[in-house]
Length: 96
Image (cartoon, rainbow, N blue to C red; front, side, top):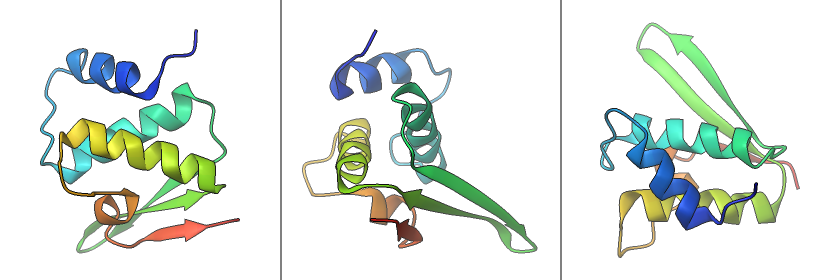
């Protein structure tokens, strides 16, 4: 069954034991779940370094980028425009 973005985000947050909308890693986890749930071609890479993990996201299309940015906006209940670039600190690779 396909859910709209807002239903998916709301239900996923409710089913998560601990979700902090101001925590970048929580939102990244939600993005990974959205990629799997909607069977997107985009993917995330995690590089382990001495300074910590570096998360990068590879976006397959503009449609997928817009969908994932909507997931971010809804999960953070934000009135300002927050998108995928903000969550991944600019480590976004577009393959379109």
